[in-house]
Length: 83
Image (cartoon, rainbow, N blue to C red; front, side, top):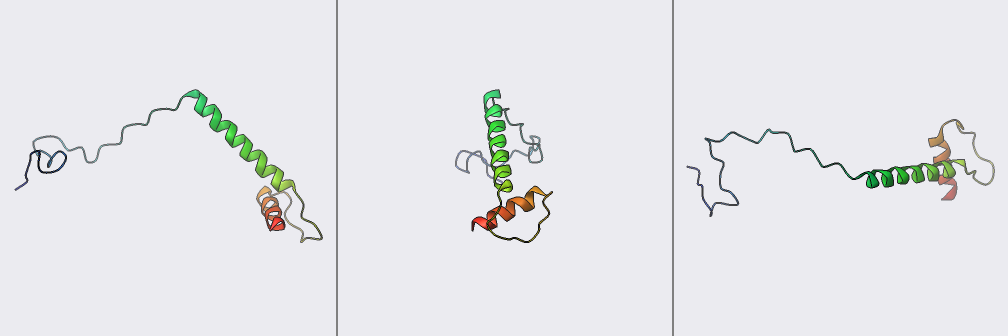
C-alpha cells in the first residue's frame, strides 16, 4: 500500500484520485530582458570578429595550398601555425 503523509518524503506518494502530471510539458522559461539579448548579440559579434581575424592570419614560411574560400580551413591553418 502507498503511504501518504508528512513522514513519507516531501509530498508523499501521488494521490491516484488526482490527475497525473508526469507527462506534462515543462513551463516555458521567462524571456530575458532586452538588455541581456543585446549583450548576447554583442558577444556573438565579438566572437565572429575574433574568428575572422584569426582566419585571416597567415602562417610563416611555405604552406600547403588550402581551400582559401573556406573560413574554417583558414582558421584551423592559423591555429596550427600558432602551435
